[in-house]
Image 1: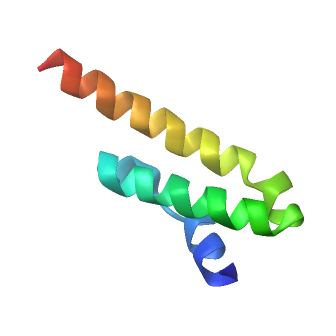
Image 2: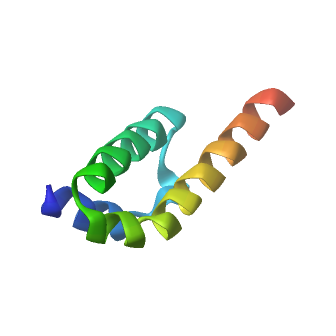
Image 3: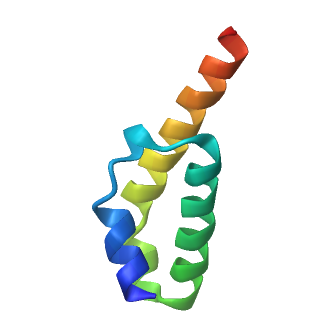
Length: 63
């Protein structure tokens, strides 16, 4: 799971679709619950992903 977490840390979230963002959030949540160290560090990544998801929802509602 460490390689997935490392991948998510370096991911450019601005290029992700809503489905991809949701998958990343799911994986990150799962990893965080299994590893307390990651749980403390994952807040910034989750914030980026949630911000991207909000942007995508806003774009969808504007159409």
